[in-house]
Length: 184
Image (tube, rainbow, N blue to C red):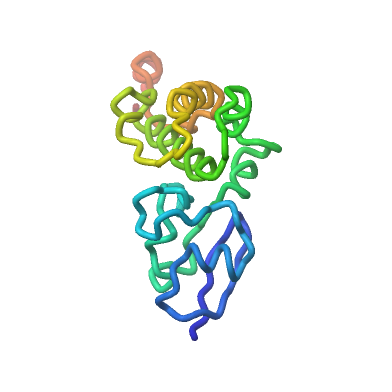
């Protein structure tokens, strides 16, 4: 067994497990975090989707040996804290649109949706129909139309990424400085 340390839902955790144990089992069986669900164990159904460093990943197909101590893993349990509220806007949209039937796939669906919206926002665009078509999370109950509605509603309420401030001077400011005889 080896010691493995990483950040889970904002808190540093350490576990002693064999290097080949997959992250899903570390989360569920060792740490008691049961939001990510076991579906296929191959990363196909995506019921276990969580985030690593802000990007969607499937912990059922990643051995713990691939996780670095600086990695930040977020599960559905830690999602609200990322926006400082009781519910993340995507979770609220899921409830508003009454998406869940059995609910088994919903944590993975929500985590995938948040990552998709975050990625689109980083590119200064909205989630497209093509983005939604690329979602591969399996829903046994077939609530895909409500899932899409919820993603659109959640996207509208998710915080927008902060733009980095640049230190460029406007033309007017440069003209003013030139008139005063100072360097632009």
